[in-house]
Image 1: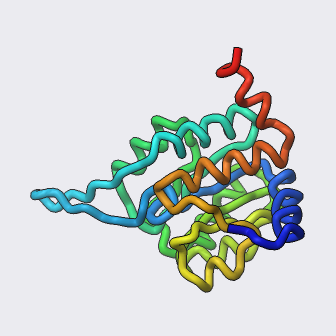
Image 2: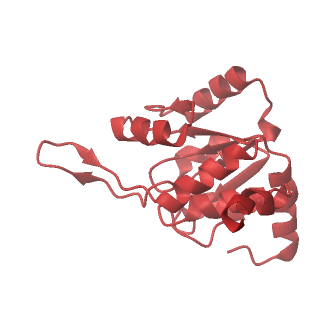
Image 3: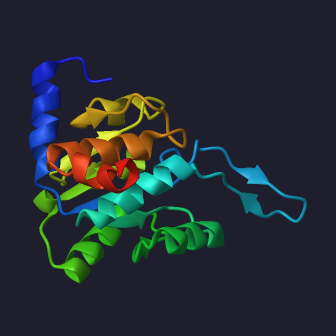
Length: 181
């Protein structure tokens, strides 16, 4: 969705420097819908293409993390499936979660990327070296990031970001090599 070639090259330069990519969940790793089961349980749908992109990113040496305002056993399960060790849920103050994560991993905010979709994500998006959003994100969020995906949240947006980072860091072809042999 980036139309300015300079903006995309700037986003690429920023993505090339990150060592930790942080994902919001609702609206980014999912389409933002909440489905309630008969017992009141929340059901979320995740995209396997997004998940594989996160795994490829981690295999290239970029760590992954989740920061979400909502608390869900399903998110914990998905993070476990993807090997994401840093998961912060029920964090309505995402700035605090971000500070805790930085302290835990020992890197600065400029070496982090974050993809979010709503105004609750702005405190992190304003601090990271690479800020991204999705086309179905809030307009005030999309206006303040370095990169907006073509794919919607929950429909390949996370994979698009992972591929963008892999390309920016010169690791895309290496990531694909095992599948082309």
